[in-house]
Length: 92
Image 1 (cartoon, helix red, strand yellow):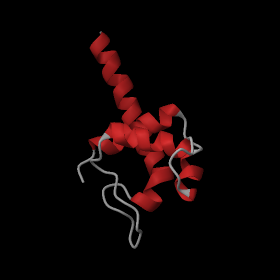
Image 2 (cartoon, rainbow, N blue to C red; image 1 turned 180 degrees about the horizontal axis):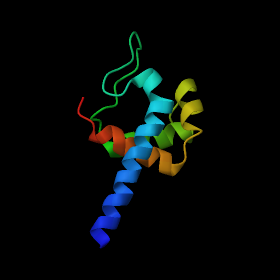
Image 3 (spheres, helix red, strand yellow; image 1 turned 30 degrees about the horizontal axis):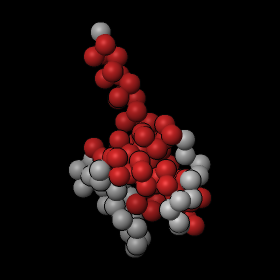
Image 4 (spheres, one colour; image 1 turned 135 degrees about the vertical axis):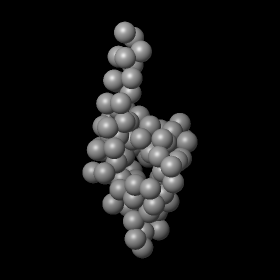
């Protein structure tokens, strides 16, 4: 029973990450490839731990970028974990 519950929570997190990425991240970073003419790096396939760390640093303003500090400032820990898990599972 525990395995089914863990899979459900994990799946919900992936779907939440997909929704948040579509709403917040994809305009600049795309989903699998960067948006047309955008100088921003693609996030698909990046290490989830790296993405979590970077987003938390942007949110806490210990890593500087006017755009990313503002965007990440609106993300909760759950949002960050979900987005990182989603992008980390995608194939570039």
